[in-house]
Length: 301
Image (cartoon, rainbow, N blue to C red; front, side, top):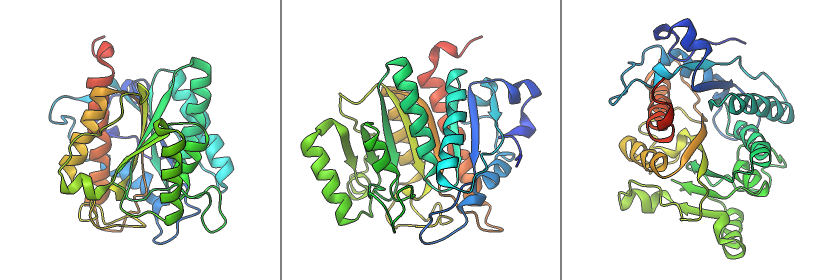
């Protein structure tokens, strides 16, 4: 399936075929456990992106080029993960920033597999920062190992240090796993849950000094307040605000090199345009932050 290019109406043909950013739509939906519709997320975001202004408030990240790949089409999780990983590896090999549009959160595992291969080839350590309402640390969910509720458990099993932001729904199993991991390997997992972040109005992601320089950011749209994004399968009250989220990601890009990111779990509702447009705007905002703060040597030329 071919979708519209991200911001395609505003870009030249060259900017749509060459550039810094590499959009990978992955309309996969197999293990959602409450509301449905995440398979429609990528198409809705790409359609909404046509309405974005090129100026993001500071600059024009689109000038660096935004390549939109063909969608990953797969019915089974294992096939989806491998196909997604191949596209992420391709993007990294071309020195692009891969940006996955989900789909359910399981699509992020494809990026984790690719990052595992990339770090073995380059010798560079990578950490994963997660913005999410849920811990996603279950070993399996309803008997499914490759479930949207197990995404970050797969990341930890691959040996990635992770840092969770905005969590406010977590099972006893996940709490135990968090605490055990923290006791065994303090550098392997950290968190700033929503209750603390929102009540204290925290506007940075307080990564430990030992957290790797290279970071992959995974954004589950339910990490933000459902008043902003009600169109998601498992909304939870009490999430991050818009500017708090932007400030947090700004702090991340200033302290670490963000080499890729994703946005998942948008389940668009007909005639509710604000949600896919907001998701497209958030993606474009992160592009700008990555371009300005993580790739300063490539601003010119």
